[in-house]
Image (cartoon, rainbow, N blue to C red; front, top):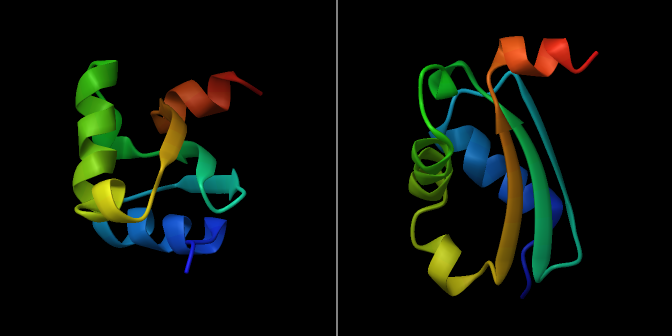
Length: 80
């Protein structure tokens, strides 16, 4: 059974503090906007690693592709 965007959102939220989390996708390819205070002071690769940690083995087994935009709360607010 393919994961849903709601599944992916729940997996991320369970392992990462998020102020905003939006996931869309078709079961194989997903896009996410993730806003977390845990990203503060971290480079892009470290932010993505936090998300991959939250997803764990699901990234290898269930999720074919995940495109993500990782922002701190201040960066998200600046977008308007």
